Length: 347
Image (cartoon, rainbow, N blue to C red):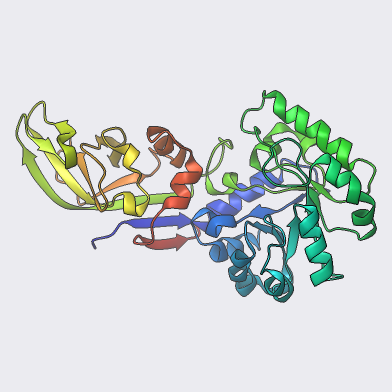
């Protein structure tokens, strides 16, 4: 086989959700964020695996992402849309029974005029300056919104992956100031917010990256394993170079394997000459530039020529690989390419 094998452990995703769910009180609902096609792992399959664990509320970034969840789970779940009610979304919001999280006065007006009586939520800006109504906008429409009984009022933490960052407390206090006493269902915490403790949990938490084995949830079970086939192994003499730009040269005779994957498959060019692939518990460094479809790997230390090498495995997590590329695990997961043969397991 000339493409990599990506194994996705759906049971591990469900177990991570259950563990995060247990971190909050019984009266706190725990949703699941499955945007970006389930962080690149197939939102329909992910949602279907989470439903038996107890998930009844899902969050997506755009209305279009909800269709796969509806196909899998029907009308048995609530689907919230972070981007709110965008122009052109009305029919989809209506037909798929979505709950848009309205981010502005314009979106509120659009929703109430286009779909009177249809469920909606509100997103508030508590300091991140990304999405949501600011305090002055919210004050102008708050009484009207409360009278319409929104399904949820939420905000998003900017620095929850840094527990000691003062922004966390600042946003918590702002969220309370904007919502205390209104009798509305509230949500502030994603994965990092859950780990900050009960005062951040409110009525609903919405873990995302923690479900998929990523930081800041350090106890998460890894859920992806990526194995790459070796196309060819060659002997490289001292002083010879490997790959584009002659960026690596052999300081001694070496054996170099060329594996079938590259930046077209989500293995970032920034990994060039930095990261390693693994054969069982043996690290094998990348040599030369990561190219579109191929990566050179130094396998000199291996006793036998390998048929495959692993880049995501028990010895290298998505966050460890991301660190080598000076990025985050989110980018590694959501970049995993379409050429991989995907295998979904429940074990």
